[in-house]
Image 1 (spheres, rainbow, N blue to C red):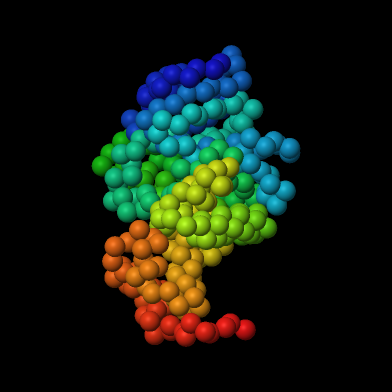
Image 2 (image 1 turned 90 degrees about the vertical axis):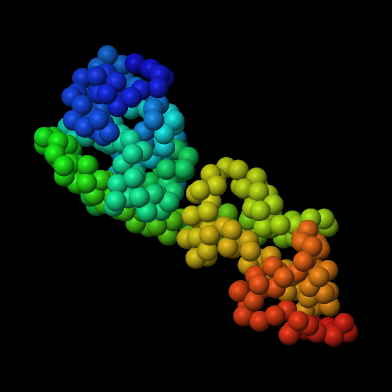
Length: 301
């Protein structure tokens, strides 16, 4: 079965032959699929799915350094979702669909921006250890148990709290995966530095935004959201912060070692005034560039 229509949560439940326990949340139970081996669809909802990754399967981007007890995927509204009967495991549900309205709940409204993995690509999925898989399954079952109760004034808050805990665990597990992929992270960081160095050394207008665009183009195999989080895992800074620091290092070199004025360097970046450059410089280095201007005849060791 391969249906690519855009579903509502209620339509999805009818197709899966399961009751609608809540109008904004549905469980995913691959064992309910009948006739075919998969169901592909989209809709105005988020999806969190636990799939069974097999050795050698590259669809979800599994690396040799990753666990293989299960793979957690995240899809934002409008994204294509495929449920496979083969992902049914031990009679347990394997995921959730939930309406964007849940992110307006009090417990989640300020945390949506933390869950950047909804903007990752499918091959940037989260690969779980056995302990992590058990935690995910336990969280899914707790949410399912709450959904099976009659709806009352506490229902949405408790479901939202359960969803928040599941997503917070996902954040923790992704940080562990980044830590296990240090070699890959360093490889991407080397490409990033090389691209940025080439960009800064050429003549013409320069800006942080343009530098980021060039980096994302050079690393197009990685989604912007994943790249940003990878850089943060490797350096402690977001991609924009990291590029800004590299730009300031370039400016410091131009001012201190090459004797250029700050106004001249500001002009290279398309800035009519150097005031913003001064503020950024002071924010990073704690001093003004002029305090470290060296004589033109200075020769570094």
